Length: 276
Image 1 (cartoon, rainbow, N blue to C red):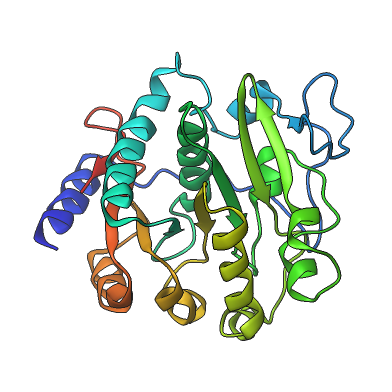
Image 2: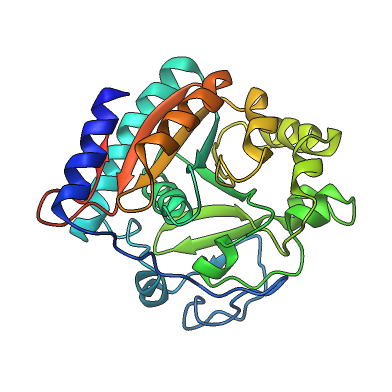
């Protein structure tokens, strides 16, 4: 952990905290139209998918779909490092989490997924498992009235809740969180979640599965589900994450391999991201 400690202190000394852009989202609400392409109706067509709006994505700081954007390069490097490890270990499920809120884990998960989707021999399914604060649909500009909670409650099927999205020639599947719940801890420890993960592994076995998880420290949500995951990406942030936070996460995450730690929001004068 010493190299992580040094990176955090080095970046914190260079600049103060950069406040993360907050996207207001009420319970059960989602952005509906801004993220759709010019011809998008918001209706799910499994054959061609929903076209995402690159201008809207950029306004949300989602850039990894564009290979010409230099801001996508750190995500491409992270993608290559993570996929190499996952391939070596025959892993499929990657959980993306953070010590506390405000570290940019959801943006990292989305950008990483889009970077993977750009590779012709790869496909990806992005799942919103932050049940207390689901944000994938909002960030992507998707309209949805069913998602993870509907599947867990048996009101719809997994395949009917997954949204096929596309941007340019690249496609990405998304299982959104259609509403928030105060019972996330119970769900995470439930047989329904175990069954869902088993079905995802079976039905989408050719895909890399990225799970946008809740933060580690505020609840036991992540700890409850760790034994069922293949590996974890921990997203930290300058001015938000403390060395104590990272050390606590390191103790909590012992039951699943930690493939990388991302130091986010580092000053531009040094480096935008550190990877370990």
